[in-house]
Length: 167
Image (cartoon, rainbow, N blue to C red; front, side):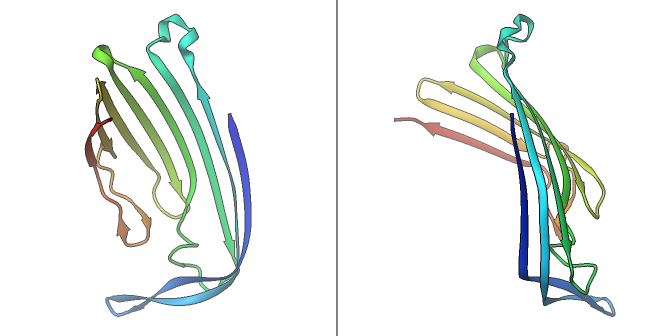
């Protein structure tokens, strides 16, 4: 188990705030004199190989992160310091399948401070034979549409295949 806590008091942070004129939105930069960032992170890993019925499972992971940002800026809606991920809960597992294939799943429940909550599933399939390794990663399996920064939609489902030869 790991746990950490952080606290940072920043001075003179540059951020952007929106200015709307008709149907046009532009971003103006400004200086925010004091920004206080604090939070904590915890992660627990379990290796259940001692339980016979769970011997095919290599690892369980459970993690939680909390973030809070306070500022003394004149605006309420800054591009970065007003839009952040407040809570994140992650559950993951890695297990073995037949024929030497391993698979992992990660489920992330995220609660931004100013947007709708979301649940994102990621998976990975890994196979190694001799000196050749293949990996298939699928991030955001169910193609959830969301933004971490205002007006910047993150990619939906993302699939990556890799092939590696080890010398």
